[in-house]
Amino acid sequence: MTAVSKQGCQRGDGVLEPLARNRVNLKKIETWWPGMLRVAGSLVTNQVRAYDLLRMFGRESHPTPLGQAFAEYGRIAKTEHLMRMVDPVDDTYRWQMNRQPAGGALRPLRDPDAAGLDDDDAEN
Image 1 (tube, rainbow, N blue to C red):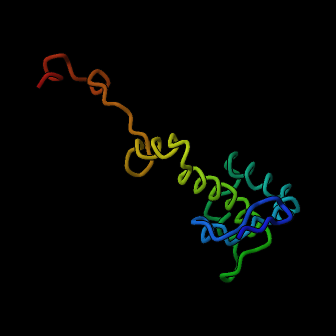
Image 2 (cartoon, helix red, strand yellow):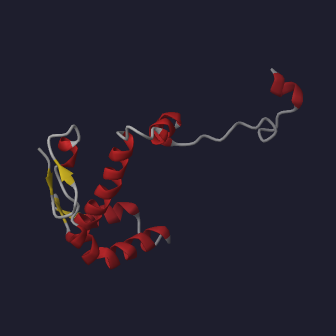
Image 3 (tube, rainbow, N blue to C red):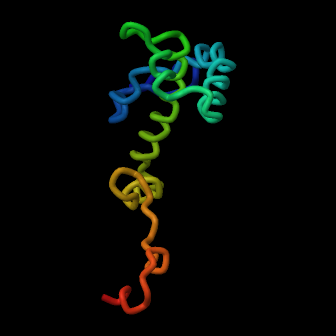
């Protein structure tokens, strides 16, 4: 048996039901969006350190309203990631995830000329 909520999403006893237990609070994101943009701009222009932002997002183990808005925004990306990982039709995303090096960082190719090696050293 499947029920349809106000947002048009189907809910039922499917295999994804445990993943879909929470909803994103878009109102919280909309309310704090100008502040979120200011924070992002300050971080990009190096006007504030990431450490200070993390301290600002939570006080005494409780998230601030701005921190809660960022958490809600993060749930959108998390949901998209999970849905793309379990997509039974298109496995491109899973394939790309498996091709990334450990740690997710791309490592540059080693160029023997950049290291100051001549052709004889590069062959050995």
